[in-house]
Amino acid sequence: AKRQGRNAFQLYNNGISGLATSDFKMESLLREAIEKKEFVLHYQPQYDVKTLEIHGVETLIRWNSKELGMVSPADFIPLAEETGTIVEIGEWVIKEACRQNVEWQRRGLMHVPVSVNLSLRQFYQVNLVDKIAAILQETGLAPELLMLEITESIAMQEDIAIQVLQDLKALGVLIAMDDFGTGYSSLKYLHSFPIDHLKIDQAFTQNLENKEGLAIVTTIINLGKSLGICTVAEGVETSEQSNVLKELGCDIYQGYYYGKPLEAQALERHVQGGQK
Ligand code: C2E
Ligand code: CA
Ligand code: CA
Ligand code: CA
Image (cartoon, rainbow, N blue to C red; front, top):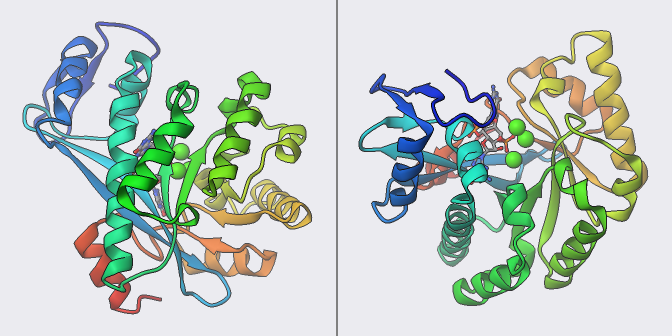
């Protein structure tokens, strides 16, 4: 079962183990997962629409729990967010993604930004900017090779959000607005938030064959163009979608058609294989 709001007795059916687990149990397992090294990062490539060269990679966390089997981020991220564990998990993700990117630079494999998803709670922690500055310092990653993905929900406290985003931009990192159009969209904050990338949610990409879907994606791409923000189409699964997006002037492809999220080594092979 999927999560339905806050309920300590909510049950999950987990992956291969098929065990049902309470939030309470899962939360205590989550807290130990970093130490037990149960988290793994996968990286999904993004490609330039015009040149089909690699443009970046998005970091997506996986939890391989000894007791629960593979747990989807869609199942544990909301719980980690509710209980606050996400702050520690998220910091580990940023550090590991930066370290990995530095390694890729060093080995001459790729020279592209790595994107990391920031949860709401993480975004609003008081020392976020200092933490990120420290991680960049510690790992030696150039700030322009780190992209932070936020969602529209950060607009809840608009003034604080603008300040945090400006501080992050001052550090030199890139900002992407994730799942654009699925939350509380406002044209006002698109103007006031310093955003580099606008990510078109996969639900829209996968709806391109109908009139409404096409209209929405066309609008987002044109919006990106007029604001000078790069548009990234998520969830590109077919050559048809890929062609339509190209015609509409979308900048970047991300999706199974171009590459699934892969562990670092597998991604290296995929990229060296000169994919697409
Ligand atoms: P998201 O940030 O919107 O990530 C995109 C999701 O779409 C990923 O699911 C990815 O595997 C999936 N995807 C990519 N291409 C395709 C495609 O062509 N077709 C389909 N059907 N799906 C595609 P995933 O990895 O299960 O992650 C789910 C969500 O969990 C993410 O959505 C993000 O909100 C969250 N998440 C993942 N990793 C992290 C993390 O490190 N921190 C935080 N705060 N959230 C994370
Ligand atoms: Ca994302
Ligand atoms: Ca997304
Ligand atoms: Ca999403």
